[in-house]
Length: 353
Image 1 (tube, one colour):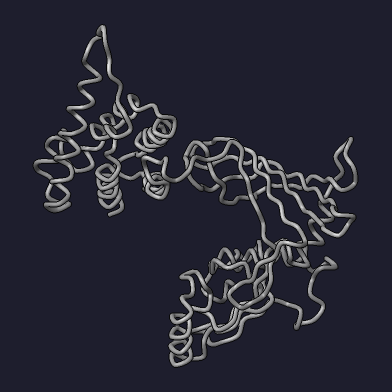
Image 2 (tube, one colour):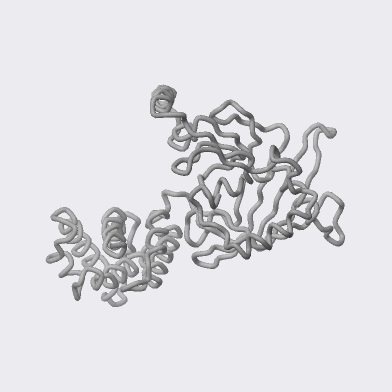
């Protein structure tokens, strides 16, 4: 991939890896078995026999091979056909004339290495093995971030069994994972079997994998801050301002909202809008709502509503002393999700510049 636009492996490291793998029985014995690229220096047209994980990192597809369209006429005809089929935006045929799908667990080299790395677990049968997860990361549902985030895999236990008099083969993977954002550790069970299959865009079958996380992440409608917006804030560069505390307040706001802790939601919303004025070069959020011109008139109007609405409701609960009879906030009283998202979108836009 280094000769196809990707960053090249440093020469010394490349030589070390070459020396190691050339001695392996898995090293390609002929050129036909080796990974290869074809095309001009300006445009590589064919990627063949690549590791599916490499292809996923570079192009976003678990595949061993990809071929570009010959010219704009071919791609135009294909796009017209895909449009009529209502093909998904993720369909590789929008960019590639052919795609050879292969998940890394189906890669013959991976299969051999995985088997060699297996070790028996004391007290377990031969169908249960531990797998070395060093360096492995993937997307899992985080119950704290309340969305799908990148996790480090800490441990993997694999198990195989048969059911229905040996006619159906089951594969199970039990994983302990750690969120890269909030460091929450959770458990995940992945499974698939020999009978459940689906078909990809090219009509080729693949096994259906199911995944369940424990504890379960709340349903999307229970989010106060959209998980994608939360990830966008978390990923902001720490140049002029550090958004770590803002990110944590948003995480805790989602937790409180999902659990019906609406008093805490109001306090956190007020804390968030009092936290961000320096991003807009203003001392208070009232002045952001009245004076900040960068977001346009609609942004100022939304911020005025956010300022007046949250201040009246929050101050009523924050500053009133104990009484003989009390009323508690409902979900309806804290519904400032759209306005807060508008604020966070502008924070992201300003800090990305």
